[in-house]
Each structure stands twice: as structure tokens, then as C-alpha cells.
Length: 333
Length: 279
Image (cartoon, rainbow over all chains, first blue to last red; front, side, top):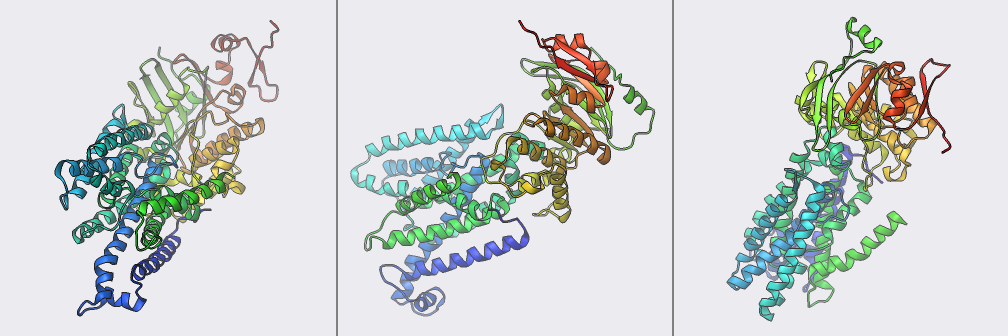
């Protein structure tokens, strides 16, 4: 099914999904170790005056987490959408080009070399992501131009190689540190500072906005590189910029919250089932849908085995796999 | 080897004030690593159909891409209405030139209408969405290729023949002044083959564009093209009207098999058949 890309449909979709996002976010703020009624959450969000226990829970603990989930979910889903179009491959996800492996390796090496330094991990991870992005780009060129086919191969090879290196480094770490690295491999939304949130919001907003700028070009790119060139698309410029934007979105998301899987693969497909492949509709749908999905997944991760906590990547995987199988059956059955 | 245009139709056109697009391919040479296209010249006026024929590997598709302006010729140039096509920015070129090569199959959910709508991409301004005029041209293209009833079907669900018509529709939606088609009838049954050739010929006349078609259908080319170029191993061996180009001995040699060239009594044009031998 596809919803024609018109101003009215776009606005309607954005409004509906935004309302959905607000609803699940409020639910996520209300539910947890201590259940808070909506009124108290509301006071916690906007109220001035001395902070009671409820306000602290809402503001200091839950709100940052919910905001992070929104931003990371939107970033990963948008990046996945863009990469599926760029590589013309429905199996592409934000990690297929090795970004998450690079980020994980960056953080794990920093851990190994420097011990536990409070804020170094995200920076080291982002550095790892950047280096991987440049490396894969250089490798993905053929005859001096970017080729989506070569790029995919370069990314897959790099990801595999980096995963092997990660396992090697893990074997060098003490068992105490190894447990901490589950964070990078499964994702964790519980550790975020205000500074990070303040940086993430504009970066992710600009990244998604940048991808949206190329929405029309991505539609044409689906037809093929040659066909796109014949329709007047500057293929090299579009592919390079989309690659950079998608990699940056993935890099910042993974640097702060580890590699949360399935979201970047699944949400674009779910989005296509609802609004079709026109990226003018799909990108906002995927971004908001990704935000919703991660807020809900994190809510489940916090509550399913309360008082314990599941890694959020486990929830997206366990929930994601059956949904993906169902999707597959529906489209090919 | 430098061949001049010899078609009677073209020499007549030179003396008439040209209205509409004028294609001039002047002395183009192209070189790949292992293959080269020798000096080629031809001209065409609005409303004319040029067919490029020849055996596999003779350089037909390469010539088409050079004529489109996408490939830079080692020598010579291609002018459309006096503009060097290769020098144009890609978007400007795409507004004038519609090129449909052999197409890759899609893996994504895209309906036929969306597929054809991509043809309007070069014309989309700064706005995000298509204008009502863009949608009208999409409707027009779907109607001309008889795909209106398929408009909401997924491109992955239609037959290869219907897909080929969708590619033509998308190229028509570009409203080009120069229409270039690489084997547009490869997957079509005889009925659709004839229909597509006639459609291109009629549209070229009514809309006033130049059409250049690479084809293996020698008889369709003979019936419906104004000028034919016969290529072999990168060289243009002969060009002109069907009667001039379709010489039995030449064709038999070029296609490496005996052929028989007769006259179609209805139109007076050549009709080519391969000779059945029992060996």
C-alpha cells in the first residue's frame, strides 16, 4: 500500500505519529520501579518549586532515558531507511557498513588501554565510527567513483574484520570489564549525560533533515545508478552525502547507546508497509516510528524482568525477529 | 572512415527550415579499453525515427549512450538544437534527453504510477511535491503505453513486457526532445512490438521529438524508421533508407548467416528473413 506524497498526507502522518510518540513517552515516564500517576509526571516535567521524589524520578532518571530513546530510535531508523535506498538492498541496516563495529572497537580499546574514564567512551566510540566511515568510503570506490555494490561489500568485509578484532581484544580484558562490554554489543539507554543530550538533539535533527533534503533523489536512486544518472541525478554527490549523513547518524547513536539491533532494519520496512517507498513520506514515518519503537522497547526492557533490566537490544531483537518473519511471510506468501 | 548522411529524406530536410529539435551527431569516436566506435555522423529532424541495427557487440548501445551525451566522445560532438549534449549539466540534459537502456529489476514496493512518476524528476523545481501538470504528464504517459489499468500494481508483480512498457512510459513522462531507446521490444510479443514501434513513430510525429532506437527487429526498423544505421564491430557500415541499407549480401555477411531480402508488397519496404537450411 502506498500513500501518495502530498502536503496533506505528509502533515497528517507527522501529526498522527507525533501524538503516538507523546503518548508512549508519557507512559514510559509513568511506568517503572515506582509507578507515577500522570498528574505527578506532568508536575515533574513542568512544575517549578522544590523537587519531590516523583519529580526527581521523572526529571533525573526517566526523562533523559526517554529522550535518548526517541533520538536514537529516530536516528537508527532514518539511517536504515537511507542505507536501504543507497545500497538498493532491503537487508541493509545502519550497521551493515561497519559503523557499529568501529564504534564498539573504539570504546573497547579505550577501555583496555585507559581503564574506566568517565566520558572517554562515547568519544572513543565516535572516533572509531568516523575512522570506519572514512575507511569504508575509500574502499567502496571503484574507478574513482562510489559504487553502491562495492560499498556494500567493503562495509560487510570491514564489519566482519572489526568483529574479529573486537573478540580478540575482549579476550585480553579481565572478566569484570567484559561484562561492561555487553553494553556495546546489545545497547543500553541508561547512561546519558545532559551534555550528550544537548549535543545529540541538534546533530540528529540536522542529520535527519539532511537526509530528507535528498528524499526525491533517494526515490530515483531506487531505480538504479545508471537510471538515476539518466534522470539527471548527480549520483556521486547524492550517494556520498547520503552515506556521510547516514554514517554520522549511526555513529552518534551507537557512541552513546551501543549497538541496538533490528530497529534500523525493521522500522523502514514497517514504514513502507504503511506509507510506501516514497521517501518524502517514508523518512518522517521511519524517524517517528523508530522513536516510538525504541521508547516502547526500553519501557519493556525496564519492566519485563523488574527489578532487573534487560539490555534494550535484546528486547528489540526478541520482538523484532518474529515481526520480521511475519512481514516476510506476508510479502512473499 | 567518414560517411555523410545519404538519406533522401534528410537531404530534403536540410533545405527546409527546421522546426522542432534537430539532432546532429558529428564525427564522434569513442574508445573503451577493448573496443572502439569509429567515426560516425548522422542527422535527424523532429518527428524522425532513426534505427540502429547490427549484430551483438557491434557498438549499438555504446553509440546510443554517446548520442545521449552521457559518454564523452574521444572526438566529435553531439548537438541537439545546437547544444553540445555532453556539456550540459545532468539535470538539464535529462530535461531534453530521455534514455531507456536495459533496466535492472527493483526489489522495493513501488507501484507503476510511482515508477513512471520518476520521469518527472528532472522537471521538479525546488518544491517537494509534483505539480498537477506533472501528474497530468504521468497520466498521459500511462495512457499512451496502455498502462492506466496497471497504475496501482506493484512493479514487481507485472510481467516483463508490462515492465518494459512502464520503462517507456517513464521515459515519455520526461517529455524529451530526444528519445533514445535501447531494445525497447526485447520482451514483448509481436502485437506489443508493433504497437510500441508505431507508438514511438506516431508520438515522434505528433509531439515533435527525434527518436533513436537500437533494435534487433530488422523488419520493424525497415517499416517504421526514416533512417537506419547498420553497425558492425564499431563501424557504421552503411546508413540511409531501409532499401539502401538492407542489402542481402551485406546483411548475410554482417549477421553471419544467409538472409533473404524481399519486398513487402504492402509498403514497398524490405522484408528480411533468415534462410532455412537443412545441413
